[in-house]
Amino acid sequence: MSLAPASGPASATAFTPRVFSGIQPSGGLTLGNYLGALKRFAGYQGGGAETIYCLVDLHALTVWQDPERLRQQTREAAAAFMAAGIDPARSILFNQSAVPAHAELAWLLSCVARVGWMDRMTQFKDKGGRDRERVSLGLYAYPALMAADILAYRATAVPVGEDQKQHLELTRDIAAKFNHDYGVDFFPLTEPVIEGAATRVMSLRDGTKKMSKSDPSDASRINLSDDADTIAQKIRKARTDAEPLPGSMEGLKDRPEARNLVNIFAALTDESPDAICARFEGQGFGAFKPALADAAVAHLAPITGRMNDLMRDPAELDRILRDGAARADVISAPIVEETRRIMGMIPKR
Ligand code: AQP
Image (tube, rainbow, N blue to C red; front, top):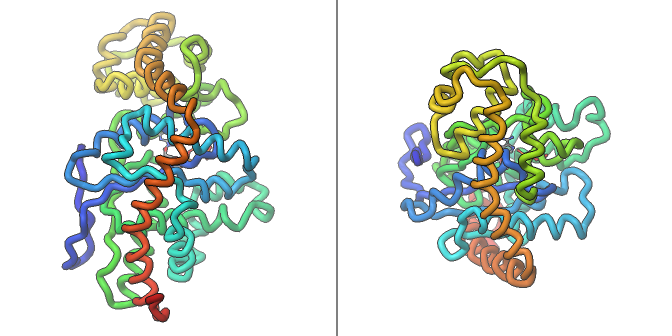
């Protein structure tokens, strides 16, 4: 697992190696969230860097959430993290809104970020769509909160899926402008870590669209809570084409749906996409899909089982999140206090 050190032009500061990442509890987590992010998180534990993982409930609020469902989804996401191998004794696991540093630093960094930078964010354009005047101010400001999430821990590496690359670049721009404007070397220029065969898992119904938990079509995604039959049925019905599989990924350049399924297979079994193509060369989807369904069920069923077990004790999940929040606060509060001092606020104590 590569963990590039955070760098800055002529940075003299040795930043504590810290991995940070988060997932919005804005719905049940999908195979995209799992392969693009969650599956990789556990691998950083014990690798010499502190690992800090967060359920970003403040981000979820940027679009309407039913309050009781949001609470449930946050617990379910916490259960998914643990079922996927995040050990709350080795990592810090918490929900974002329970640690004040995130919202406070987001405001301070909003005064550093430029409107022109926000205007270029493609995720806002995609989610705001044609109704841009009517979406929440929070949806527009989302990348400044994301920068605060990362910089509140002076995180040096952030494992994410491909869709978050632009937000990570913005985080670096904000950190660099802060350091420049105040003549300090305080924030690291955090590295995005985007690796593996499934950095962008696509919808099962449209190979040009990202698999997303908020897609109105449930058939477009595999949810981590889906049972074995549902997973197999969704894969059977996934859109494909009539061509047989080629011997390598080169032959799938113009076949987005087929490419997506091969990438999913490879990511689930930790093989290369070319090896998967070679195995199924010349065969159609009638042979490929059942094999993919078997691999998906074999990999996901134990995770879903563990999630369901953990969900039976919501009070314990809440306790784990509170404990994580207290530990996250110990790291982030002094960093925000130092940011305030650098920016000219009277110290709290
Ligand atoms: N389809 C995907 N393929 C690979 N990685 C993905 N991620 C999300 N979708 C895919 C990665 O999962 C992490 C958490 O993402 P998020 O839930 O905070 O927000 P998102 O990227 O907006 O995910 P969704 O599922 O599309 O959520 P909604 O529908 O609520 O907007 C990130 O690392 C992301 O890259």
